[in-house]
Image (tube, rainbow, N blue to C red; front, side):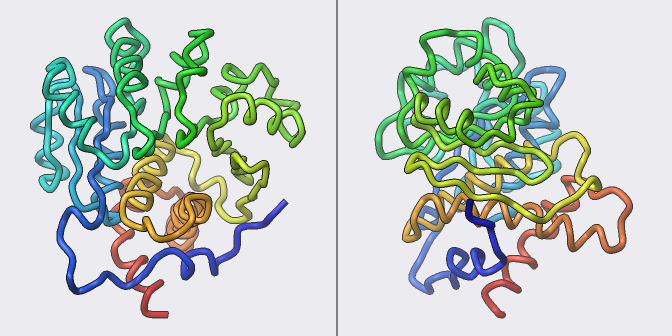
Length: 281
C-alpha cells in the first residue's frame, strides 16, 4: 500500500496560468442541504470555493438561501426542487457533489436518481453523506454509477454499502473486492483514511487526528475533492484525489498546533493561504 506523502501536493497544486478565467478552474454543482441540514452543503460549497473552484452552484432547499449567500457569496444558488434548473446545472458541470445534508426522504432519492441518470462520461461524480445511505438501500442503483465516481463513506456508511463490518474493514482484499464491483474510487474515511482506486492500487493517509472528529469534516473534504478535480485536470485523477485528501488533513494538522478542536470552517478559511504556500515552496 502506498503512503500518501507531502510531495503529492507539489505534484498536483500548480501556479495558475496567467491566461485563464473562471471556467478554467472548473464548474462545480453541489446538491444537498435539506431544511434540517443546510450547514452540510454550505460547508461543501464553501470548501469548493476556497479550494479554488472557478464557478460553484449550490442546489439546496430554498430555506438555506440567506445563509448560503451570507457565508459564501461567491457561490450561486438554485432550488433543488426546480428540476429544469437543476438539470441544466448538472449538464454544464465538470464535477457534481451530491449528498451532504440531503436527507433520506423520497425527494432525496429522486434527486440522486436524476443525477445518476444524467451524468456523462466527461463529468466527475462525488457521492457523500445521505446519498451513500440511499445508494446502499437501492439494490440496482450502484450499477448506474459511472466509472468516474468517487464514494466518500465513513466506516458505518461503508458497512451499509459493502456489507463489511467495521471490525473487518482493515481487510484490504475485502474492500477491494467490493470496490471492483462498483468500479468507483472509494475514499474510506477513518483514522488512517484509505483510498481504493479503480486500478486496484491503494493509498493510505498517515496524518490527521482526533482534533478532526467533529461534524462537517466529511462535507468539507467532499468540497475540496471537487475543487481539485475541477481545476487540476492535467494531473492523473488518482493523484488529484490523493492530494485533496492530504490537503484536508494537512491544513487540519497545522491548525491543531494551536487548537484543541479543528473546525471544518477553520480548515476552509485556511485553504487559500495553505495552497499558496505549496506553490511557493
